[in-house]
Image (cartoon, rainbow, N blue to C red; front, side):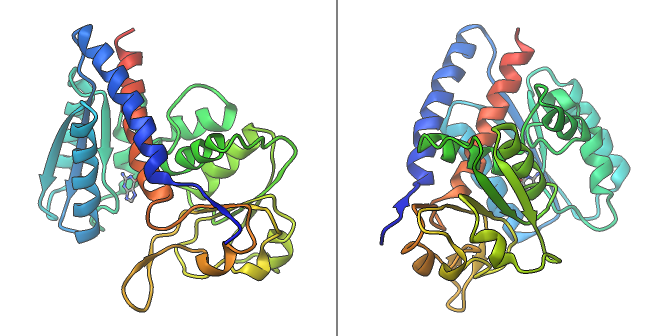
Length: 283
Ligand code: GUN
């Protein structure tokens, strides 16, 4: 193996310690940072994610409330809950776990969350703030990727970053964050022709597609930084990313593993955003 690992568990530990310290400082002023997590339905993956988010809050001294509702909950009732949480002074962050049942318009629900409490960074006001470089909340997964680059002291100025994937949650905000740090950014997606020609030019590659082996060793320039956002299962049912880790680690300069890479960073940045929301609200 030539690549150095960027360990998301270790970095998360450091960042969560800093969150706990800042949470203590706020508590001393009489404010306990609070996150409300809303889960509708019984999607098994969502149940695990939500449990992990609530546990992470507890471990870092943040208050959290988990609201679970039946899959039959109406859109109007959910919008009503979001409205109530917007007004709740002890709640600084609101997260509605996605996906929502098909009869609920997820975008409508996201837009109902107060931008001041939008710790997922999915509201159009948050997206607009990121696009224009104004203060707001950054989506947790790409924000975590930026922290990983920061942790290795990587200077993005003038570097070529290739983002594979164009989702609203990862690919698009990732591209904007990299651009904000003066990288030259290419966004590749399912219609991209000759992906390999692009990735071979890249100093940084972020794979965020949700498909195994999207990036293989022959597609990577020696020494490149490879961030793997994917969460897939291989044929043996083991968790794996979008990157062929075993091959790419022999070529890349840095690489994030799956599990233990970007995954834990997503929850960590949710804690950071919730704390930030509480700090802003208490100013
Ligand atoms: N579902 C999968 N990832 C996420 C996330 O980061 N936030 C929310 N709200 N739902 C998700």
